[in-house]
Image (cartoon, rainbow, N blue to C red):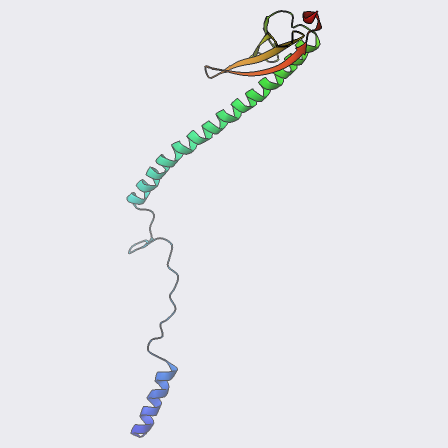
Length: 159
């Protein structure tokens, strides 16, 4: 071949396979390669960092869970106390057992943790009295209460 022919031939090769083409990269293996054993596990620093992270996050998560459970328990107790107070208020108003200024009691074996207290106060109109029923219970050494009030017609008082 002539010199021109060689230049044309090399030009075609250069265009057919440019020098900046790079072979596709293979995916990196999981973990780091070790000269003797292929891949290796975690380093001591990585294990210690994971333990520190768990030591910080776990107590906070447990405290949040405990707080949520306590709030749910208190809400359930409060809802039950309100229901018991409404039932006792209806009973006292319906049976006209409001003549005494103060009454108290419990709800028996079915609801041993709850106690009730009823008070009667005079109202502006002498024929009406205010009946308050409070239900009290203790949770973790702290007393809680729910009070429900109503006005009751006491025709005998106005006469």
